[in-house]
View (cartoon, rainbow, N blue to C red):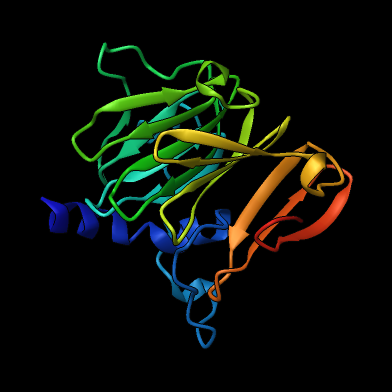
Length: 207
């Protein structure tokens, strides 16, 4: 099934690479854009929410789309809105960021609904302020090399490790608690940026 899904989706990746800042491989610089096959999926093809903020492909081959009001899974042919275990969809929820961790869990950063985890078997877990998240408005989720998840929120940066959150705010050197994006470089350095402040590097104890 995995190979079949990947074959279906492969022809779309050139187009998607132009729209996403994800981890897809770069296009061949020796070829012009017109040398690639193009196909656009819209409402007529079943994509019922065309405003897409984030794209991630999980190791099982599925393509996940974080949209303006839902989370959508694409198998190369059909678009399906993701529903939780109790069949409650993540509808009317703006999905800002998607990332897969080494265990195959998909992490979903949303505005207003916190941070969610979808396990490979479909088990859905949501983390909110009730679980220690500083804000339910999460702009970005990053899987780090040490197994933790960084969540950029409107009230600081949250590190989720072993089910517990550690919060970083201005007390740890951030110029503002409005953290918008983060990444980990190949050498293990971690970087964040936010509203009205530049690029900050985590030293292990402070920014």
